[in-house]
Length: 407
Image (cartoon, rainbow, N blue to C red; front, side):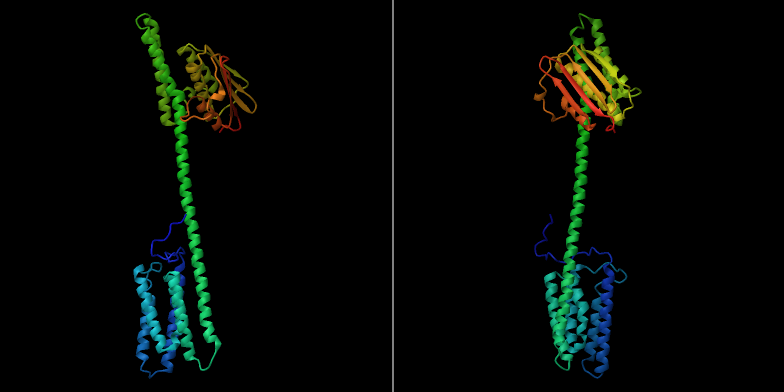
């Protein structure tokens, strides 16, 4: 999941430190370098005050101090110099140190801060090579200073350099892995947020599709049938034709109210100012008036307050079921039954139409209309939908919604 480094770039090449407090470690190393440099210079001046190498040693010591502190801008503790300056600075620093060690072996232990600088500034392989060179030079310098043979002078510098390098490389790689995990976590969180937004958008589109199908589309379909009927009998039965037009006008007004409610994402217009029982009775009367289908409504049990979402969904389910009956069933009678039980509310819509085979209807729809839309609404409420039908025997649609699951 991680992108490879650009060509020619070491995978372990240092990048911006993820540690915001790394500046203080650099400050300690700079301080240690100055202390070691000053100690070595004082020792050389004290023991070789008349040496012809003294001016060179003093000059190189000053150059080492300047180059060491050039690694950071004055007054800005967390901002290093531009990265393309770092290799040149480190090269000059190591070169000056090598020369001064050859002139005065007592400067050998100034290599400790240099090891840190090299490990921090260079890719891993280059840093390891530099540490090896520094360790060898320290061994040579210590042997030159020693009066006799001491195995520790040969073994101690490489051991210390190896230990420091191993710890630093391990910490760098562990930091890189942690940073990679953080990057993956951030990327995953962004992808999850994008997925949730997409799912929310799709769910909202499905909801609006069902809302439009169960209200505006049905209303427009009714208007079309009424206007077509009025057009056919306009000359022979003008009174009846005008009645169809007035009914179509009333349906258009209801559709306009629904469209305005969609804009504000409120409850269906049929529920404004009344309970679900009254809305279902009004729906039954309206369907009976605008079509040849006779619709009756019954309410059983003691009504209980229902959440707005549940009331809206049950009304839409009844509208969708009656729309399917009017358009496909060729029925003459339909019945809406709303039953309040202790733990759930039942909505049954039955008709005496031609019926159909429920097994031949897909449980999901590509566009979410008709029976698939009703099934989706019931599922969103945590309920169950049962459809009982057979060719020539009518249809009974039953939606059961748990009261405790209603949001």
